[in-house]
Image 1 (cartoon, one colour):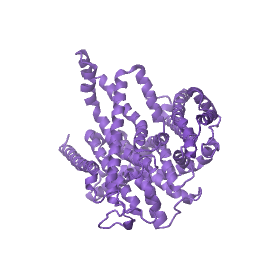
Image 2 (cartoon, chains in turn orange, yellow):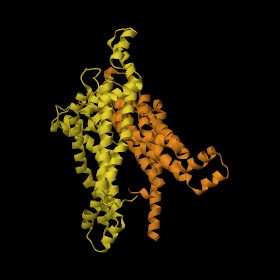
Image 3 (cartoon, helix red, strand yellow):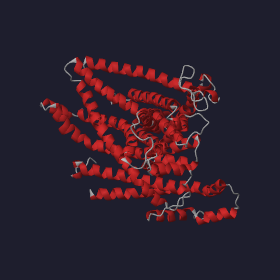
Image 4 (spheres, chains in turn green, yellow):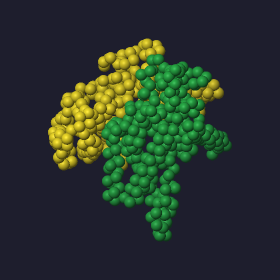
Length: 283
Length: 328
């Protein structure tokens, strides 16, 4: 390896680290914003002030006010609690469920593996959003049901990854040695398999946050997720889109919030992938 | 090859049974409440007898599996029941709205191809040439082309399609007054905005995949070999690289049709495009279960069939497999 290649590799690694710090901080800021939403709002997000309705963006109201005179900035900040939190919850749910099923299938094998994998094939055969729409429609709206609907279509991907990783681990010499040494199944799974397979799974879930946020907001936009008056970005946009001709900022403020959050989480996901797998850099 | 086709068709059967069973079970679980809800919505307090009679009329009192098989039989003959709301035949309604959605899908795919394949190839080519550029300016400009294209693809990937739809509406229809805000029938003019919306989201994702595919091909040994023999870069790109990546590119495109089918639902209802997506969203808001059922089942079947065709095409077009020199 020539000196230049080594130097380029070092620079690459350093920029990935810098990116990781920058985007990680931004993502943490977003999460913190959703955690302390109430304390960050300049105004009460649910307080109506009809004399000041549909005010254009100004120094007092950076994003203007909606048709009831509610401050849009405060509503967007409070909306972050619903939007960001429910997305992270959703991703956590599908990661855990998928991993548990995948590891179980890979470890146990036999008929349970076949049955569960055929079921996951079936879910993968559905066009995702179509199915989520139907599930949310059947369960009736509501944020909780939207999360269930998206979780129902998203776990198979994780189960597949966890299963193939578990199968690969099962063949390794060290695991056979652990088995011979008489380690219990629980110990093998939690101490040996999980730490070794969790990397790719976590990368996948980080990359999924942005998509899930958009799909959840999409369902809410259609009225199948969070319902007004709860401030949620997707439902806020659909709630106000009839006002697009007169007061566009009311619709665009939450849209911008979704865009920025999705972008930050996508950038973070890409960076984490680059960090974990240097081969994918620049791809 | 014939054996392979047969095998794929046989594999299709359990998937189709699974799809229909799942959709049926889901709707039936909800459907039994639907009758009660129907009366509750009407505002009248009705006795249990009336509810039971209504359930019997809809066949909801029979055992679950019996209901499933009679429904499956009906579905195969194009009889999927009548709408709870309008009382019209569900299958007919669905079939009448399908062409509009297919038109929208086809237009979006066409636009996506036109936008993303040239841009993806350009980005990959610029990135690849960047390392061999002779002077600094050339290197910077090539790197910049790739960077800007990737930047736009990234932006497109982070924009939810309903936001794109509303932005386009605001810009093209309200601000510049170029196009009608709401579609007035299935015309090309009203198809422009929904097509553009769907194509923007799809192109952003697809351009990235095209770039990665071409880059991978450009890094193969035969390209280095061709360069060493003095073959011009353009010839290598057009005659070898693009030709051999086309197969992957087409497959990736077909696979993204699934997300497009789901995406049309939101876009159709925003732009009032009279297709099955809008039909489904309306049916969901009004809890018209037979219609939702028809939508889910037929969309899934369309998706599965498209995937099957892609897979078969892939095998038919790949000479290694066609000639029996399979990798297996």
